[in-house]
Image 1 (cartoon, rainbow, N blue to C red):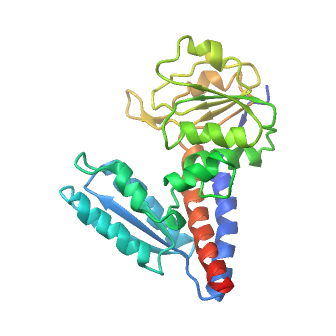
Image 2: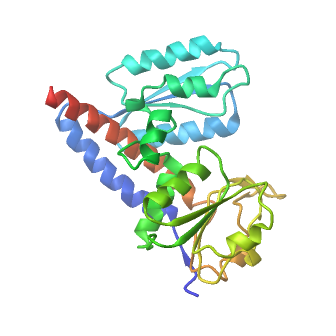
Length: 288
C-alpha cells in the first residue's frame, strides 16, 4: 500500500497562510475579523484549547477576545454575555467553550448565539442549512476532515463512508457532509452489533468515538482511507486516537495521525469561519 500520512499540520499551515492574506485584504476595508471565546470554569483541557485559539487568532492578525467566567456563573448571566456579544459590531464570531457546568443548559446557550456569528456551526439554523445543502457555517472538526480529503484529492462521490460515532459535534455532521458530496453513508455507534462487519466495507472510515484503539487492523479494508478524530490518553498518558495507528497504517492507503492530524484543522476551520462571518457582514453592509 501507499501508506500515506495525511499531515494535518502541513494542510493547516497552507490554509492559514490563505486566511492571513484574506484578513489583510479585509483590514484594507476597515474590518478586522473578531472572535470572542467564552470560557466557563477552570477545565484544563478547555483552557488549552482556548489558549490555542487565541494564539492562532493573533498569528492571523485577527481580533481576539477572551471572556473568563467562574464555574458558578448563573445561566442567565452567561446568556446575557452572549446577547451582548451578538450586538458587538467588532465581534464576528462567538464561541462558548464546551462542556459547560451541569447547571447550565448547553442547548439554550447555543441557541442564544446569533446564527450569523455561530462560527462553531452548532446553532439549529446552521445545522438545518447544512442538512439541506445550503450555505452555512460548518462544524469545524468535520469541515477540517473534508478539507483534508480534498487536499489529498480523495474522490468521495459514490464511495461508502462509515462514520463510527454519532455526536452532534462530529459524527452526525460528518456523515451529512459526506452525503452532501454524494457518498453512501453508514453510521455506527455504541449500540451497533458486529462493528467490523460495517467498518470493513468502508472506502473511507471516520473514527470519532473517544475510545483508545477501538479500530484495529481487522476493522479496516485494504486500501481504505482512515480518518482518526479521537483524542484520548493511553495508559502511559500519551495522546492517541481511536485507531490502532501502528497496525492500521499497514492496510490503509491514507491515515491521519494523532496528534498532528485532524486537531490542527479544527482550529484552522474555526478561523476560516470567523473570516467568512466578517466577510458576510461586510457584504451585507455594502448592500444596504
